Image (cartoon, rainbow, N blue to C red; front, side, top):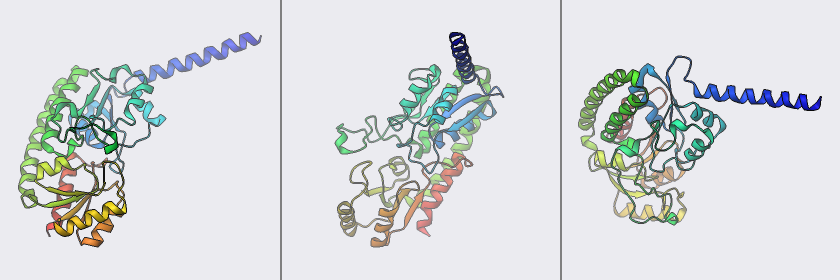
Amino acid sequence: MFHQWKNKVWLAALLLTLCANTAYAQPNMHGQLNIFACEPEWAALTRALAGDAAKVYSATTAQQDPHHIQARPSLIAKVRRADLLVCTGAELEVGWLPLLLRKSGNAKIQTGQAGYFMATDHVSLLEKPTVLDRSLGDIHAAGNPHIHLDPFRVQQVAEALAATLATIDPANKKNYQENLQSFDLEWRQAISQWQKQSEKLRGKRIVVSHNNWVYLEHWLGLERLAVLEPQPGIPPNSKHLAKVLAQLEQNPADMILHASYQNDRPVLWLSQKTGLPVVGVDFSPSDKNSLIQWFDGVLNQLLRTES
């Protein structure tokens, strides 16, 4: 009797597991692709290119540091259902994405598969380190990964992503091509407008909290004078802040730039000591904003220092 009961329990557990795995393997109820984006910028780009053909989920928000995310069970479940993974790459998500992929057991989106898309694989990267030494802080071996702050690189990623969407979902290839053409036209027009708006920013000298603005600096012609972190990923101490303050007394800056998710206490201290304006920028678009709306907002915040 006991053995019969035990076998029934084992069979019921097996059936539940099989049902769960089957559910994970199926697309959502509307027949759309399930797409898991690591950051809001890639979620926004994917939505623009996929339209109604996909349901896109972003693992992070504009108020989170993408370097430091917990591999929660809810994220594992989302990755398990995904037909396509769209992330930054270049080790930005090294602290949590490999664990998600391993725990998900989803073969479609593992490294080397058609459903594995890293944006940094499709553009050239700035600031590739000449020395790899973890004692120097949070250094990315392939180069600085924050490419979404350069609209020209975003355009390159869009072309590669549209091609990937067409590969994994050939039935909607025409849809992805048409959406790419629409995005490309609107994006080029926006870049032209941004170039004109940003002329007065060229040559402006900035202080940054973390060295994650390099592509924005390169695009807008900003000059970085100092970084508040003594080493990448290491919070500033009083000794380093005093050193930055002395440096700025000799070579003044025009503004302090930091991401809204970062601790603003060092920034506010330095602003109080120097009188420099603080520009706190959302490092990624919000759920409701397109990439164009987000870039508009970033530029407007920078340009307010001119008024």
